[in-house]
Length: 402
Image 1: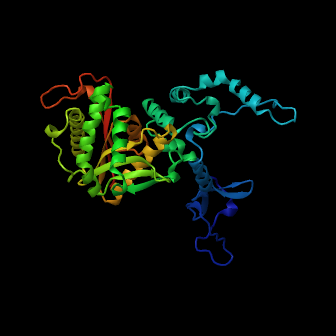
Image 2: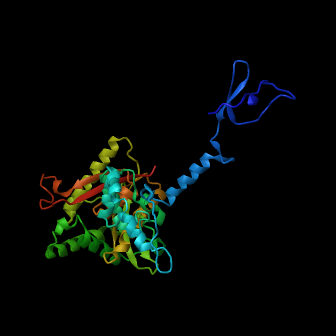
């Protein structure tokens, strides 16, 4: 606030001709003799070099940088360079300059970094991104959609709980690099044999939980595939008729992914006694976990009335690794879009894959996530389902849509 000279004081509150009347948004207050003292402005305008500037416009512009500049790329120090290294053509030698900047002030930076800052750079180094690349976008620095998941998961462990994968990569459209080449098709247009092959091979060969059923034993793995195939065939038409499931194809119509969902309140019953012996333990563990999560949600007084149950999602095993995460994200995002379009209030999913677990928790921000440890699960006879299990886990997740 500033006090102006007496000349600016209005001495007649109802001034007529000849009086001093000013229309202004400046703040003021009356004195005891009906004078007025200016007391700053009611808005955020200031004068800079004689020009009136609205500070909110500057603030708005600064906030726009978050769309293009990740939080970790905001400069924390400036380095003075006495002399730029030059090449023969008298242009700046970028390689030498970059190398010299890596060395300058390294000790000082180590002293300045503490707590979360030091942990952040340690995680960055663990996923293979040099600190020298901190001023680049995540992809340009050597990141990928896969290590972005790992990156955010590690950061959550050291306190960066508000960071999501999309925030980390929003300046370079993380996960969307292949979206233009992917299409959704309804399940009735998907070849059942091809879909069965994707599901069985994906879970039997790449599954992190399903390996408990066959323990990588060749004979058991073959039998597990047969049993899974039988279960798949018995419920295929139910998923087709449900209208909630879909396939993912490339632009050349090649099937690369599948997602099967149903209405939790109206899905066909599945009795444990009728399931094949290698499949039954996985089913028991999943159902127990889902029921436990539903109880937790119910206790929080937010249990939705209509829930879409994402039974499984799978990506073709021979899809290149650089595509796999993008396709999984594409599938999981469309699951939520389908549920919303069908006016479900929530989506319930069981995720055995570490990739889908992290997509649900860190990217799509599911509201409830319950971790199930395979080596702690019992059947109705109080017998361990997987006595040979080590540290395999499954996550039961729920996303509220209302």
